[in-house]
Length: 541
Ligand SMILES: CC(=O)SCCNC(=O)CCNC(=O)[C@H](O)C(C)(C)COP(=O)(O)OP(=O)(O)OC[C@H]1O[C@@H](n2cnc3c(N)ncnc32)[C@H](O)[C@@H]1OP(=O)(O)O
Ligand SMILES: CC(=O)C(=O)O
Image (cartoon, rainbow, N blue to C red):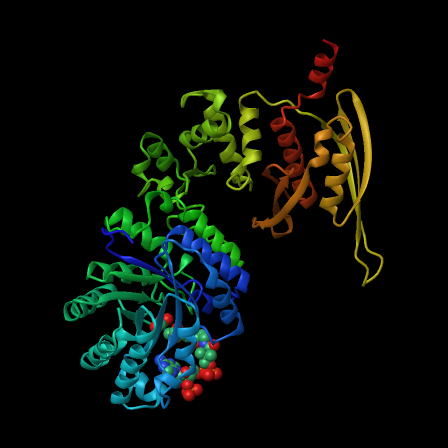
């Protein structure tokens, strides 16, 4: 740790994060996450509770050969079971034998928890805390004490809550971590309590462990730091028991970028924040929260025309930080909320060589067309490829690669238990030629996609690499319920890239055809395949 460090980071993704409903890390997941957290530069990585499950035992056994230059592994546990001498307590001995660099044990600091949950006297609880900490401290270099329910305990009985901290300090605890276990505290109260504790224990590192039940875990953590806490516990993406823990993905940039508080994460490591967040989501098998502050896909996405106009002049007019600092990027959305600035921004990204100015009639036409289409049910926000084709059409730079003559799709089901079979026939004109094809599919859109590409693949062989990778249908409400509009979003891929297109109609197959048509045209445009008459011209010249 650097001398200038003011706050140490304690990650409990693998312990409190593993207590999240719906998350079940395997031992391999835990090892990958632990190593990634160490690479990122977390000071402390709480790996789990040795002895609580075979998974955690295996994890600690496997981590014995870790090689982390800057991070230390922590084993979590509780004070000894009441009635057991610390030296005979299996739980404490599991921590000692775990191979971790440090232990973090929780103990009761709310009087009612000692008497109700543990069923012991207040005095016995103080002994339990000091003896458990002392036993560990004689065997491990570093021991942290999580004062469970500290803020509720302090409200109920400040004297007793402080006595518990003193018992841990007397036992030799290196850090006293104040837990807002039920997540019910507010920042102003928490600030005052932390300040009081910091004043009473000037020689100890005071830490904060906040839960998010009132959606205040990050605010509470920041308040605690402002009141003098020097150790911050939290998880990646805020996962954790019930509503989660303080989200380190937000806490870290707030400390570093807004408060100028150093936390042993270099500027280069900070740029890994977005990818760390994505990585943990992958491991936890969770969809990313697109609006997640700092790292979400929409954290720096601009939709309103007024906003886009301003950020084109200076990003900070509508962005609280430079997204690159946390490894994120600015996005401009195109929708019915767009103005010319949105279009120009997208143009610069998608068609940089077009070089259009804000007053170019093409830009105005594109804005009008987008608004008309969005009013008719299109949504270009998630369909960049259709949007790019729209721009090319507006610029007069689009030429069809084929023309549909007709399609017909059958869906046949032969009995209650049989899966239906879909068959599509398609007729297209490519150059001067009429081509006819048919295909079977596991659904009507799949059959249509196959038939369409089968008709085109002789002329455009690159289409054989293309696949429909996702397909979403949304029914749009209209005044006439019998004539609902349907929006189909299609994601295609060719092994190198993915692109999305959109089609809208009252007929789901027509909507799908429009999206498929755009998907194929886009692939050909991106591959710089000329339309057939140009091909003829090029091959005869
Ligand atoms: C605030 C927190 O997040 S604390 C961490 C919570 N995390 C977890 O519980 C996840 C891992 N836990 C487990 O795998 C299991 O609960 C184990 C292995 C730890 C214990 O399992 P069991 O022995 O079957 O006990 P069980 O879970 O039913 O109950 C917990 C026991 O610990 C006792 N206990 C609770 N806190 C403490 C403490 N600080 N010190 C000592 N004992 C404690 C409880 O009183 C209870 O004992 P009792 O059964 O005699 O009443
Ligand atoms: C220790 C802990 O996880 C808590 O008190 O919330």
